[in-house]
Length: 490
Image (cartoon, rainbow, N blue to C red; front, side):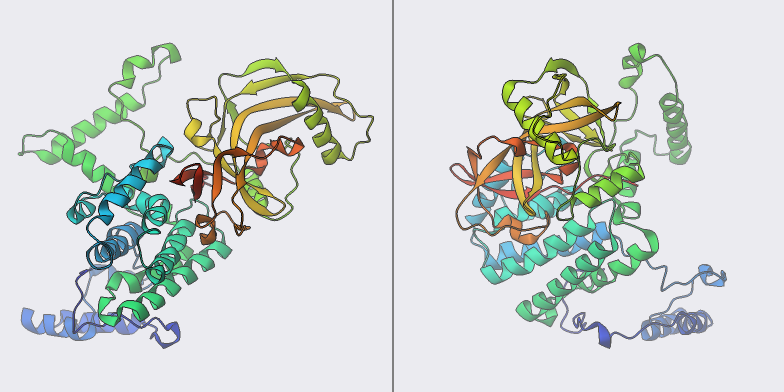
């Protein structure tokens, strides 16, 4: 779609009750009539008048060109709306020296951004640098960088409109999308378009803004946007374009390369010799094109239960796996008594209960699906910042480590998996929220190096972890939360 505004074309109007419902039978009839035109000029005039062009697909009995027209979220949300609006803000709403402020905040966020998020945007020295961003860089800027970067400099009314768009994108950019979140995302995008039209005028509205209001129907037909957006397609185009060729028999050379790579990828060797082939195998993708590891239904159910208020887990539910190294150890005095208190709460045990075997298995990283939760002591310490529910409110914490402990219940051994965390103290006057992707979570401020006193609440079942987040430093010893969407696939 052409992103330039036009004094003639009107893409505004976001009252859905006034949108006419297209009839494919009429559309097909008009297309066939256009095809029967005697000259190219006449055919073009008919196509321009009716908006219908013939395609052989229309001869298929099951084909519905209107219902099967898919809006690609990558081009629509990120390469389309995001860049259109960001360029407008930087050109019309912000001062030239604000680019330096945005770049400074971006660098602070990058220092604590987990690597598996994907490609992060580079510095913005000039506005034209923004136009060079890839779709993945733009997506990550919108989801994790934009609000902390724009909040200090963007006018309040524009910021509120942008937040509506960001929250809609956050809800959609999950590999598992509930119907409730889909409806919520759809309303966020619709509200964004309505407020933007009221703020900037009808001539500012571009086709992509109307099309984003049809994403809900596409998702209902084809599943979450990870299943049909074009990130993987574009990446493969880039890989094909990077393959050296003679510029003569390109198709044959590409197929030879494809056949050779497929053969190498499928060679089975002993694990100790796998390094020999690692240099010639294709690297795994990250971010939007990362390989999906299917998550079992039980894990998915636990995740959605954890989002509810008063979710009850005791750590014995099957959920994820520890990553090496797993070391044998024993409970220290404080964790010992904290854990006894926890077991008492989980199983309604009386005060005479005692842990007879303090042996535990310690580890520093925990994996759920293809998402790694790190700890302060691991190399994945950027993934140690997590969000939890405490008294039905979202609070940030940092993981110190993980451990597994087994007790005997009714003469059967029951293994529990826990995380040891410290809760960040909040600044006075913060409004707490119940949803990790409530847009108000960006407004809350927390003390970076100041933690709540340790207690039994410092030991939590790993099932209670909602998601990771990026701590965005706004001033000395103060940070805001930028939540990271979960990477569960089903």
